Amino acid sequence: MPREQFGICAEPNLHSYYLMFNVMDNKNAFIRQALAALPEMFDQYADQFSEANMATVIAIGANYWDDFYPASRPKNLRPFEQIQADDRVAPATSYDLFIEIRSDRADVNHVVSSKVCELLGDAVELIEQVKGFRYLDGRDLTGFVDGTENPKGMRKREIALVAEEDEFAKGSYLHIQRYRHNMQLWETLKEKQQEDVFARTKRDNIEYDSADKPNTSHIKRASVKDSNGKSLEIVRNSMPYGHMKVQGLFFISYCYSPENFELMLKSMIEGDGYGNFDHMLKYTQAETGAAFFAPSVTFIESLAKEK
Picture (cartoon, rainbow, N blue to C red):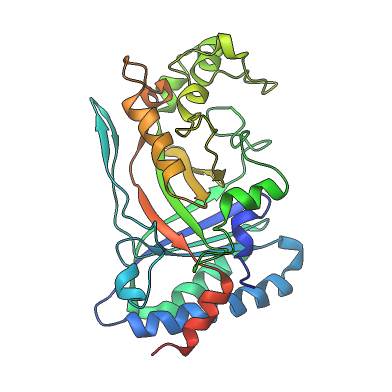
């Protein structure tokens, strides 16, 4: 039975390091071998620094998959599609590889990230690196608790992981966006105005009653249903990032299907057809967006047999 990557459904950590690479020409065979060696390396560091509770994820970009593994492809894997409505944009960015390293020690993340870059060497170009951190009791820098709607317990694995009967069982469709907040503009709002943007109280994290949720609220726009009226869920592993000049949220979505995330994002940006879009987008802007597939550990380790 395939074994999923631990970091997909692991509990939140205090620190994260996100690495995004593009692969150089004619380096696909080397990359397959290098990635196959990563799970064992991650296990060694997780044992060495057991108190850090390290969690990691390796993911392959939708645009790169066919070069990386031409033998077969996750059936629903597709590139991130840019969405735009008026001045609201979800841009598409092309990354070949995404490595997520989380733990409760920033120094451990640094050590492991350095070893990843050392292993991949000149076969890749490091396009972007982002350090995330836990803010207060799991809040976004806006002051609101993040990931409240995440499924719990075994339900989390059901939502995040591809079903066992699939060729790529225990993998996960992954989407990332790096949002940059306009904190100066956000802080001009009074607390009740901020709460109306989310449809949730700020201090106590209590969701508004259904009848009280504005159609432009984040919860309203991010809550979508399929054609049968069933709520579509994702597993969020997002974390704040930044410094005194640039601040935002590194958004991460894991799911058994890319459709759930895609429909949520369209609902937020395009709205409901009556002009009701997600008003949180007045105060934050996605600067990147990419789609990946995070295969099972079993699949990744099997790459060692590939030429």
